[in-house]
Structure formats: structure tokens, C-alpha cells
Length: 127
Image (tube, rainbow, N blue to C red; front, side, top):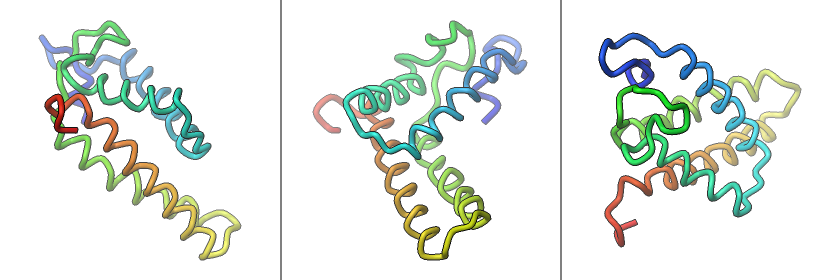
């Protein structure tokens, strides 16, 4: 994944870019957990997709990184985002049933969001 956060001409990591992306990722985790599926949330999901696609990649941070993240990497991101949460949930003072329900809700939300992120990758009329 680091490749997509490197300078296009020399392949060196763009540390400021990485730092900003990590902050946004942390915020995304909190917003996913909050589950406020309003218009602002929906608009931001489409923006996240645009920021991964060549139509919007690098614009937010004004960097000259690799210009496009292929669709296959958005969809394969689902597994690590979903799988790594369950042990975290289980390590808290929750029953197995509560952990299962929270994990299922998280999984559904991630699947919905990644589907929305795919919008810029799909031909007009095919989404």
C-alpha cells in the first residue's frame, strides 16, 4: 500500500501525505462506528472513492503521488478492515453475542462504504 503514498518521480514516501491520510483514516473509523448515515456521510463516501480514483487522487493534499489506485485494491481492503476489528471488540467487556452483533454491523457498514467508493470506477449508467 505504501506505493500509493510515494512521490511519482522518485518513489520516496511522502511523509506529510501519509500523516494526513492516517488522520483521515482514524476519523473514518470513528464515523463508521457512529453510523450516522445522513447526506453529509453519503457525500463523503463518494468523495473517498474520488480520492482513490485518477479523477481526484492527490488533489486534497496537493501531492504528486501515484495518480490512481486500481479498483481491485479498494475491494480487497474489505478483509483487513473487517477482520482486524473483531479481536479488538472481543478484548473489551462485551459478551460474545454483543461482539458478534457489533462485528456484523461493522461489516455491513464497510461493505456499503466500499461499494460507494467504487462509484468513480464504474461507467456512467452502470453503477
